Length: 141
Image (cartoon, rainbow, N blue to C red; front, top):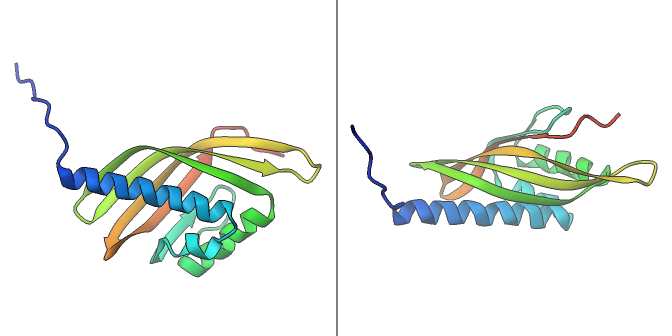
């Protein structure tokens, strides 16, 4: 019976993974401090942002405006927990979990949690090509 031997990750894989994890934390810091332009700058010129129950936003400026809208509507305290980074050449897929707080119009707040997929592409620097996320909680009505 064939049994593959355990192979330690190559140094380049570890470099990509640590870079992606760091960029994910930069994303959260910029969002949480209201620096939506800095979040938008993490996206490629044709990058797409696919938030649940919203239109697709494409390009850094459109994504910045979408994120500003989320922040203005009470989304705050975003946290990413990268669970996996799968690199392949100049592309990498990051899969993780998120939490964020949503302040409701009635003054209450809810902590949302869910999962996300980020597709990164190395275009000189690593930039987001696509971002999609959805909640584990029932829709708020």
